[in-house]
Amino acid sequence: MSQKNRVVVIGGGHNGLVCAAYLAKAGVPVVVLEQKKVVGGCVVTEEAAPGWWINTYSFEHYAIQNTPIISDLSLEEFGLHYYTVDPAVFCPFLDGRYMLLYRELQNTLKHIETLSKQDARVYEKFHEKWARVGRAIGAGALQGPTSLESILCKSGLFARKEEVDEILQESKLPAASILSENFETDYVPALIAFLGPAAIGLSPAAPNTGWLCAWHIGAERLARPQGGSGELTRALAASARANGATILEGESVSEIVVKNGKAVGVKTSSGKEFDSEVVVSNADPKQTLLKLARGATSLSSGDYRRVRDIKVTPGFAFKADYLLSELPNYSCKTWVKKGEANECHKAATFIAPSVDSLSDAYSEFSNERNPEIPGLMVALHSSMDRTLVPPGKQGLVLETRFTPYKLYGLSWSESDREKESARLLSIYSRYCPGVDELVEDSRAKCPQDMEADVMVPRGNFVHADMVFDQMFASRPVQGLLNGYEVAPISNLFLCGAGTFPGGGVSGIPGRNAAIQIIEKLQRTTS
Image (tube, rainbow, N blue to C red; front, side, top):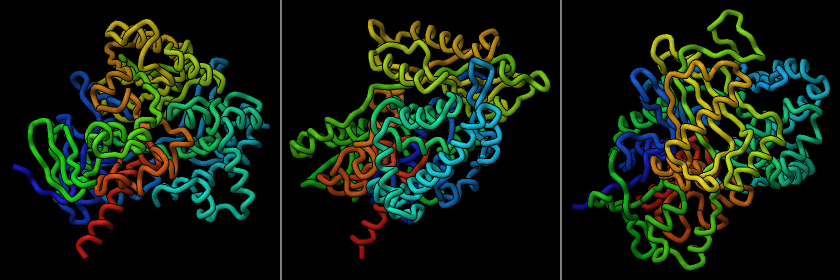
């Protein structure tokens, strides 16, 4: 017996839930089918041991703060509460110095002056320019897929076309080149390179990464959900259900039913059928179109090849969580009082000796080797949020840039995971001495674990590489989508990280897809 719905959403990741919540709020009957027993996808918080809660994958929220999603969906009414930190970002270095990125530019500049007066002067101009680029991209992202040139020109933030042309030219340069030409020290560039290219799995030395010099500025808006990252998706699910959406966990979609070039519903692995006017997939483009929609029969040979050839780098992150007996201490910023968190513990932390070290790490990763010195994304959220750990304990997160999906001559066995987890802790201890002696428990996940758990392609959580030729109007590949609707298959929409504007906890693909679907359904009923 088939069930009739106006819209079926495949996957209860945060974008799928955002899409469903907007649809439900607009009065559209919608059902979400999630293959796991809990919704959230990469944005979940799970109990690893009694009283110890870990953010299984995603653990910092930047981009969603620059959207209307939280207010549009009244998420605070469903228990979502964000807290902020200032400074937002901390980057320690082995020479005992450290970089801080504050929420206010003037505070950041005062700090940079302690490292290099010249770099402080340069950064003020650098920030003014790239902040405008970042604001333009952020506003443009809410309008739907278009070219970077169009986004910049329509933003109203650039007085002259020559300014836009200059940014477009710099956007095609390696970020590393731009940074080396501007700054005299590694302190500021390492932060920019990590929060830009490296954050989304790219080498700072790669061409066409210049536009990512704008990305670090979004980190100034860092906020975290009290209770863990999964509080966002819990609230999204509650908002959707409150407006009439149906969310079914443990229902894995096995096929998108396509008839006469139109999506008309889905079939699940349990044998259920859901007929619908529209199908929305939160899964990656390749899985959606080549597997679920039976690409060989639903797409032309040309479209099939274009989807098949979407670039998806295998993996790039290894994540380890540690339960600590007490709060560790950074050698570069000593405690005022032992065990009392300072700004370095609270801030989002990024560790890379230099831009070159990140580029070198990417080169080793590309050769299926664990980098000798990987970049490390670090968090000590329990220093601010005591709900995440048992009394007296602390939780530590280390996530790498870059870790290969496959290791040359090895496999990601349990022993391999444990060895890598211990190695990363040893690297971190160079900045935080004695931390390895505080570990009481640990958990580790490699790219293959992520693929098996939440079905992201080859453990790549951005679904399709965020290289320039797969971004903006060309995401995930030129001509595949009309907005978020699949051009060759009517009434099939994509809303995941493989669509514009890309990966990260933004909710923008889900929001934008929902708006386009609502407009289409209104046209068909008017």
